[in-house]
Figure 1 (cartoon, rainbow, N blue to C red):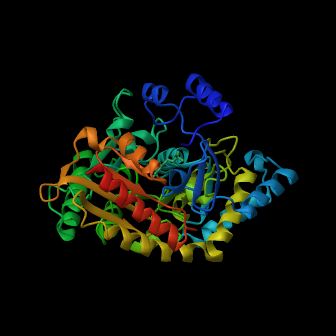
Figure 2: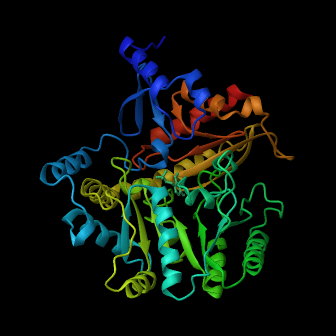
Figure 3: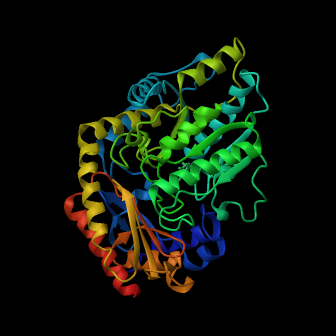
Length: 452
Ligand code: PLP
């Protein structure tokens, strides 16, 4: 029997009294108590009871490089010793963020050549909203102030970005999203009311986007936001060609196209950026998570040359009034540079091989009586559980409760994301070995058997 030390027990009590946890039921958490994680190495995490778990979710889809990467620790320590902080305000700067911006611009698709650093994904999305408003003012069209995103999408939980997020949980109790924010239906291939034929899903999304633009007014729409694969909505993969088709509609109406690659960036789906899978170049791109692999907080907005030059020309000698004290933090930038060299030194390649193994392994669960759908790309996947495969009936609430499924997986040595109503999400570190990928699949089968 695994037990906690008295020191760990006192931490659990302090947590209960004082730490407010993100995206959690405050009361539920008080009742359940925190699960204390104490250390990690590679793809394995250890808890305060000494339990070893395979982290099939890379923290929160972010620790792409895996845990215990000494060279990242060294890069952070060296930067802290030399210069722990430098602002980017007042024309100041320092080496690491400059090198990182150049490295990202060189690798990003097309002319996404200008990089604005943030602290994470939510403020990256929020920054795009601000820059896009500025851009349309600069173009003499301030009335282009309406934004469209996709149902089931997640774009963070900042005050404005949460309005682009189309998951009810992020609106319940907070009031309606801003009136400038609109949604079209998801491309979900499994539960699409228009059927699962890829061509008709693309055609209906195109028609819906056109209709939405017409409804709002052609000259009112500022931007359209997509995740190349919807993550928090349950890992929903659009049919091939969907993103390019939506991008083409935006180009036709002069609407800015924003790719939110906060989850899909940095090898999660195979290439460095998932946009490469579709061969499209967005006007703006947001990244975070894998940028620093979770070793330090950082996000970024990548702007196309056209967007940047328009803003720069309009501002002229005046400052563009948007920034954070910790924009372009040198320690985070030093971490990101080292993480990038690990990706390119073999991690991306390993991730591609392990991604193929993960997808094949999870597909092998399709014959399980509870598995309705297996989907994903690369090291990003989901398994959706149902009680009736033909009718696609979700697990009853008591069986499919996220906490219940999460606990079951945990008790069997596996950390996965459990989405409401019985969907398991996977985003393992790219450093996983074949044996670890196989364990993720085997442990999932065990959890499914126990759920029957
Ligand atoms: N955008 C997407 C697509 C995300 O998945 C997330 C977080 O999961 C965010 C934005 C927000 O990022 P953060 O949690 O770093 O603020």
